[in-house]
Length: 264
Image (cartoon, rainbow, N blue to C red; front, side, top):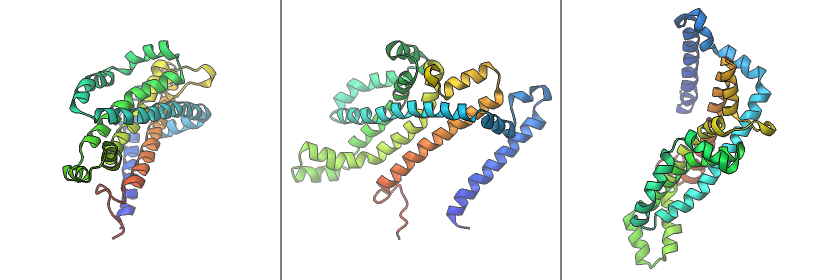
């Protein structure tokens, strides 16, 4: 069997095993009066079908907030990484404050965002930006300063300007680090958007996302629908990651050693 077929077959078999274990846990490991706490996959699927329009609309709202915050984080973090790569003194001056932003929990930042920009999409985007910014700027900065010294000396030998060194050497060398940061941020962005929606979301104008919907389902004790919301959030994260992996492959597979060559 080919390796490509195995890459498809093994996850499918693992998924089937997990579903079987889920059913077994529901029927054999949990007492009958508490089975509602772990609905079987079939009940989760029926809940999704029943509330599909509502859940898909909420997923779209969450995706908008995640994309806005993620896109803003990509643009600003790259510029910030260029600034941090200028000198160790700049990095020493700014890194503690970047870390402080990353370490501040979203539920603490959420009320501030609501006061500043109002509840809803704007706050969700800002909070998503806050959680996605740090891994992007740290990884990109590390890439910009981790240049092969031999190549740097070659550029200096040919009297390349500082800008030429930056955009012809440092930025291309930083791409693998940048995409590593993108993958981390793409994983965090949907999670951040959902958590932000729980704390700063709004249903005004049908603007509630998956986090807002999860709060409603939890208060109504609609456990299967809550599981369906979690599954949809997971799917959104997979879509984000797949998009970044595709971009990374397109940008790096022709020349970077982290991707297997298939042309020989």
